[in-house]
Length: 345
Ligand code: NAD
Ligand code: DAU
Image 1 (cartoon, rainbow, N blue to C red):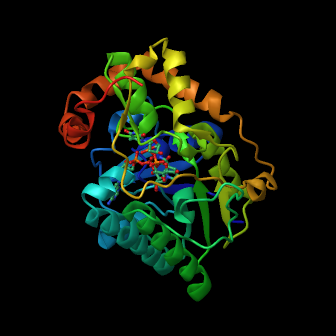
Image 2 (cartoon, rainbow, N blue to C red; image 1 turned 60 degrees about the horizontal axis):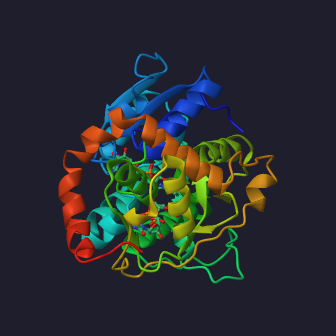
């Protein structure tokens, strides 16, 4: 496999992208990393606050749908690998306003594939367990399973996966895909459940649990996602897909208990609110294919959620400005009516 010298990390100012950039530069200090990011509400330069002085890191602000800019960036920076994290990522936002999900997640990925094809660059695509859809109790998704997405977000991610695979088959483009489970950890925008519940609990605000809260997720630490992507990049087979998670799930109610216990907060903050439309009941992935590359997760889901909650308790400098800004408007729209008349469980 060609050595990775100059990497374009799209979406590198987001949650997982910024954790990945930090991890990669620490492990591979000889690499050059160019972050390419539109800086949407979820993309924040401060997610990489400690690294902007590093000569091996630079930022291009742009849309992955801008073919001219993506191509020029790849040519001028002599990029030999694109890692595509850039996406609209929140299921609830995809229910409120789905079209931007198609623009970025489908068309944007397609533009990256076109540039990669024109310049002969390898592309690694970051996908999600949501492409498999709701998983019945007795099953764990394997990489060859049929894709059965059920939300606009998941459908846009599944479409992107299929484009990536089509470029591998049709043009022989060197691609790999990783499908991540539900990540938690530092710098996750507080629209997502674990940072939302952690910051609400710290502020003494109610925790809005959708429906009965018995939905199951594989809450995986973002660190393990980063090491999983590294394994796929360095040792994965071109053309292959790899699931990345802990392989173990918990209910949302269990996740809430861990958040509250970690933060020393009371269960009276919990409120059951109207469910998310089309809410997938369970995700579960088999991660043996990635394990066969010598990868092993460091955190189990309990540790992952507790570590994440602790990070929010210790880093209010990061989330307080977000929560007092445009996030407030989204929060009101998403939760105000749902919370009216609810009582502690
Ligand atoms: P995020 O929402 O925190 O960050 C997304 C980043 O993409 C932001 O920096 C944003 O500015 C950037 N971006 C959005 N649209 C763009 C565009 N058109 N052009 C350029 N940049 C753009 O997302 P995340 O949670 O870090 O997710 C990263 C990737 O991992 C996504 O592809 C997501 O589908 C996937 N994923 C996420 C999870 C999870 O639990 N968060 C799990 C599995 C897979
Ligand atoms: O599984 C991987 C996916 O994980 C990623 O592809 C997505 O980008 C990421 O957002 C995440 O999707 P989820 O929908 O699973 O994550 P979220 O944090 O939104 O919700 C986690 C669970 O908590 C889910 O069952 C919905 C529930 N939930 C969420 C919110 C925001 C609540 O009960 N209340 C809430 O307010």
